[in-house]
Amino acid sequence: MNSKISNGVKVSVETQYQSEHSNPTANEFLFAYRITIENNNDFPVRLLRRYWNINDSIGSSKEVEGEGVVGQQPVINPSDTYSYVSGCNLKSDIGKMQGNYLLENINNKKTFRVSIPSFILAAPFKLN
Image: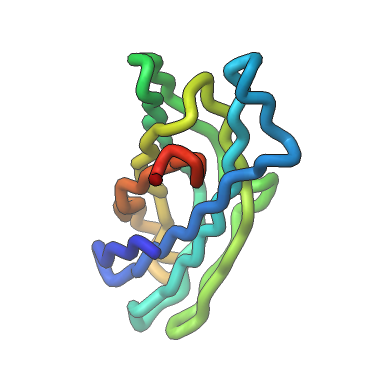
């Protein structure tokens, strides 16, 4: 598990290769990832936006940006956590993701960014 703390918020990532939804002969590799966001601040935050930079081992790169995560803009109270699962398709069996979230301090309406730690997406057979 990769974790990073920035601006009082801890973001942790776990990944899993989805062999049943992948087709290596067609260069289709699906990975799931679970993100856990822990608010260590003394104020509640709302997750407004996400930004991802996704790279694979054949040189493809894409950026993904949008509102919230998995259709939600969750509020995370002090000392609470929020987790969600999402996925990523790659054209190779190994890649990397990194990014950030735009959060809002609900008390004063100020926004700030927190980093999502860089993490590797790798099919298990590639790690041998």
